[in-house]
Image (cartoon, rainbow, N blue to C red; front, side, top):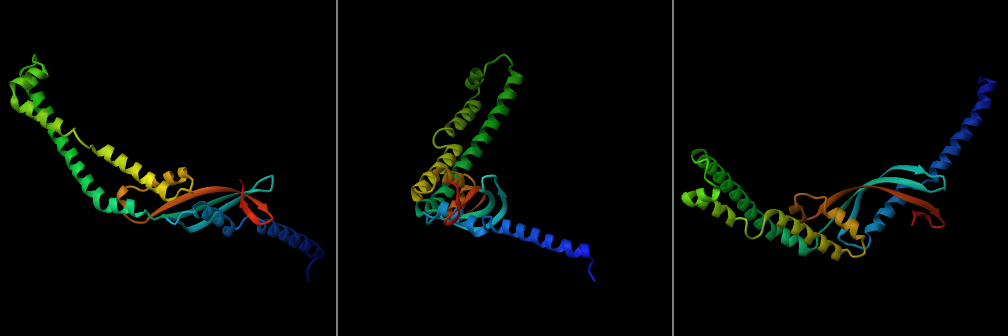
Length: 217
């Protein structure tokens, strides 16, 4: 038979549990938070939210909630991007990488040859040595020729800018800062030849309205 103390304590525990349950049920649900995430990208067919997870909810003194979430946005590049990244970009990239490698090889040969000649003729200037030794001048000229024309770093940076511009144009109603943030994540850039999954970790400020929980404006 239960003691009098146990019988008195039980209703208090049940009441406390009910209050906690009521508090938690009044917090934004995973579905509420997911609607916020989907609303950010709803205007663009090239971006879809997937694998959504509500991580935590933190109540605020004013009745609002900070909701921590993580999810993935699947970015489907328009044809203007995917076709270029599939057909043109890899070929040009390989050519510039080979050019860069050849330049480095020639500069190394030039430096080794110059140091060897300086050891023999320490008083001679570089210009004098290049005039006296045609092979040294030739190495200098050959490496210099490879500096002209498109360069690897500029090509990659320009391609990144092209992807940013095209994605902003494809999704004009999505905040451009979010679009550019997404574009800067995937590496190497060849990934933009097809669908790209981009991870997000965000915190939403949400408030209860007559229409349910919504993002605080």
